[in-house]
Image 1 (cartoon, one colour):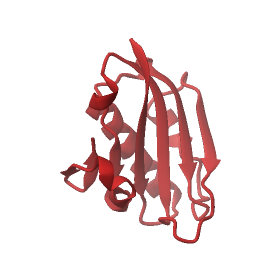
Image 2: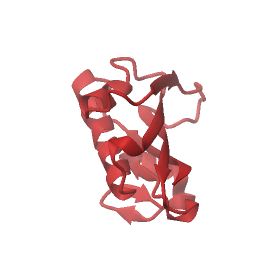
Image 3: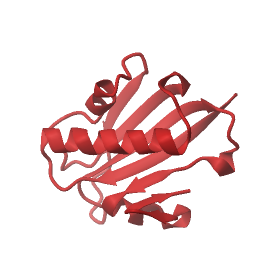
Length: 128
């Protein structure tokens, strides 16, 4: 097994606790499914949120998925004028046998514009 980093992001419609939790939960499920990951494969997960998201910690979605023994951290993104609003990003450190080129990074909804260099459109998502 090798340690790899998996990235993802989602732009949410509004800063409302249930909506944000549901959206981040969807992102995490897609990242894990796309990379064939189980909770035991996760080493740690870092979440960032843009400054306009203040209703809940994004890591709460991971806890709701049962990731109770995985180290999680939340941080605020830099407040850059041209930044995509209402966006949560995830950086997961995982153990996997996949080569780096085979890691699937997942960008959902409006966040698909963040990494067009990795883009392969799938029902509103971007992954590589």
